[in-house]
Length: 223
Image (cartoon, rainbow, N blue to C red):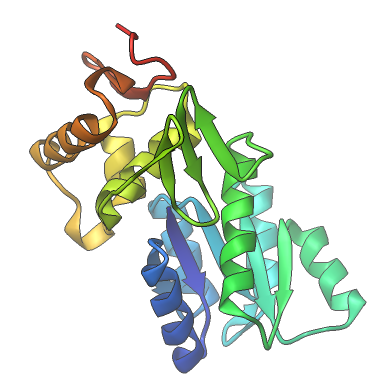
């Protein structure tokens, strides 16, 4: 999961970004609405965390412009404003969820994961593809009920494939959503990590569609 964090309080943004990173989330930061607007329109994210009190204007204004331009990025509003009128303004602008400061980082993470899960059409926190189960809350993976140990990068790669299943995911899409913008891998790196996942999950569970990309299969007998 790659998230854009829009927050002008550097200390708060650092703490939240570090907590999200420890949970396996890739985070890119913006300290103003203008910077966030540029990134949203030029980069690819799975969700955004948006503060309303930004130095160059109310965050809800930027959000409203994104929605007017059909940018459907899931947005979690994060703000110190607690009045219902302020929350209503955020929701009216197009917010998907709302967390007020002070907050628990665990709550932000849970709500963020739920937004991304719902954006892919999944209602339940545990994504099941055949005998494979991926818990979006804990990041744990089981295969036929047995735990599977994955590295952080393998977990991020599998998480994206699981959210997208049964859709085929291209290499470029994986590069955009699973890897840091400043360290995007070449196709060989993706191939190597896919190969490692196959060794742990079963070779046939991740199909290669020539010229298209990869698809997570629910059956170890898939072709």
